Image 1: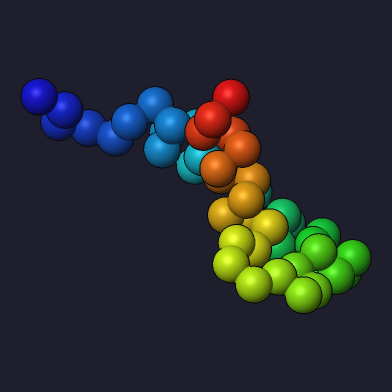
Image 2: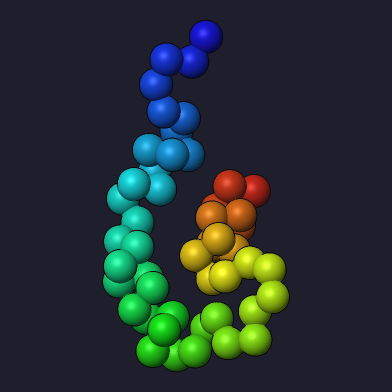
Length: 49
């Protein structure tokens, strides 16, 4: 029985999300995105590898 956070959730706590969002906002990373924004796509790619 899991009583704490998963390893993936613990690793994702170390990602500087404010900086991540600022960089993608500056470069227009989410322009024209329909379903997954850049932050969610990063989480999917990190989870699968």
